[in-house]
Length: 222
Image (cartoon, rainbow, N blue to C red; front, side, top):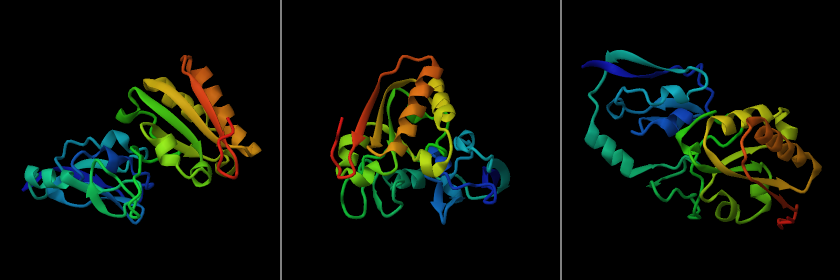
């Protein structure tokens, strides 16, 4: 049958994964760093994924395609590929690493520079702005920091960008309840803390910011 269905331009796709997270039917998956429509009958053609794409790689086209299969989608929703690892098909409510340890990650992508400016998961959320190294230094990072928060990560030294403008837009455009900054004790992490505080001030919102510093040996210093 001829019907409306998602088309993804792989040359424009930057692999951020926001469309896969936005697709409620599980029709889009990240394969070899690119978003792909995995089955025609999973796609309802409504285009919930379109607004999430930062590069304009997705559009709705009319072509020959299998009819949308609601029962197949329901079965797909019962299990899914964990967005944090893409490692195994598991129960949706228990996204875990292949080692069996529970993951608390609820949003994707996590890199600040790839994160969307607006998304439903920001609504009334507690943000965790974390330096890249913190999760490696602190052993229980998922349980103690990521759980019940929307996580964004970055390294001001390696990324070579100023996060303040991006974070300001996220804070300004969404209903953020509170923010935790997790940083290492090393000086270069100061850039992340400074950028976040500038972003909050520039947004004009009164949001409490909690800064946690982690030592190189994995201890919380403050």
